[in-house]
Image 1 (cartoon, one colour):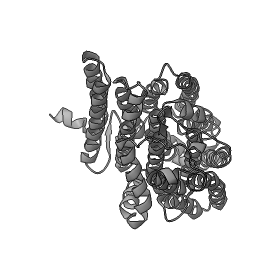
Image 2 (tube, helix red, strand yellow; image 1 turned 180 degrees about the vertical axis):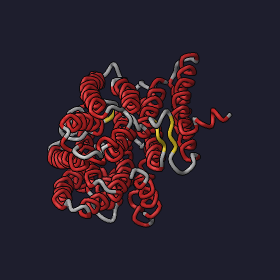
Image 3 (cartoon, helix red, strand yellow; image 1 turned 135 degrees about the vertical axis):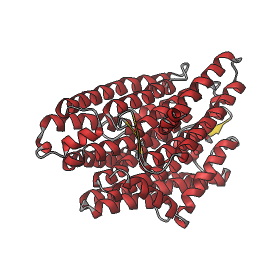
Image 4 (cartoon, helix red, strand yellow; image 1 turned 180 degrees about the horizontal axis):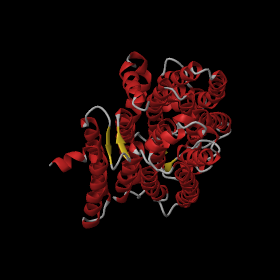
Length: 481
């Protein structure tokens, strides 16, 4: 019993992996059909709920396993609950779409559970080997999910692009990890932090080059420019629920890993990695603001929007302070709500002959479906950072953290990028409310309508009671320092 208790910090990941294996066996030995696949999907959501419950039952403080390679602290607990919740909502959005596309297979929720187990491992990784195991467990499942519609050329192309570029990024990350190991003599973040704190570590070329390659590998996973090249094509080509999954849970896990690597391992050479993160933030905000302007496909536009949003989140990391990390955590929570709500609206863009993805299809939506148009307008205004919606406060926290650290230029560039980015969000609102109406969309599926309504209300009413999120994010941030 004591032995089982010793592995309590690992219970969420064990629940996900054992649950995935059990559901795989259930799918293999039961008659294959859409109804059975949906039952397995609901069971997968239950497994995610169980994993989140295990996280919430963990005691306060910091626990470590496997010689410190796996760590659970307030930061890890917060990010895991957010990741599991995002994965569950993305799964919920998938059932109706995949049934209509004749692509509802039991393998999809199983792959989602395995990918989420990898995300949990990434969030708790305190060692370069644990980092790589978690990253690859997540990535291998996501490659298959992107290409799951084998009869669709776009889906197959998306999976292949993601796999090839993902393999390249993994190679770069491994090269960086090997250099760091060579120059510090350890894969443990604790030992690396001690080596980075030594006098002259900032002039150690091998360590700096290794750090840069490691950050490049992680930057690929968060879609930071210039390692974003896979994002628009994969977002557009993958089935829409898979895109919603990509845009939510993996982003949280990768940003959590980014923060732990930078702040827990390399605090001693903060000026060196600050330069890299600042460059990534500026490039991501600029590309996200300008490249989305000419897009006609809404999923592609949301891909560039995601790139820009990662740029804003990286401002908080560049600040390198508890306030900055708190800002990033708050930003991620609000970003997940906005993104899942927006993808629920995209899934509602459906006519009798199938899904439509062109922005012009939203023309005059307010006259045909005022509720959907209103919710989508709230989400788009929030993405643009217009007060008093939640997106404004998300940006305010990261900009304020940068200003407090004296990074005025970075904050000003962020504000200017927000102004430019607001154009393409407001343009969609104008199309919905002021253009001539087109053919009506089919009735909204209950699951998409539920997600749309809940996320829209959260974004609208966040200003009424922001304290719980701010306090929880502050507690999580302090545990990294």
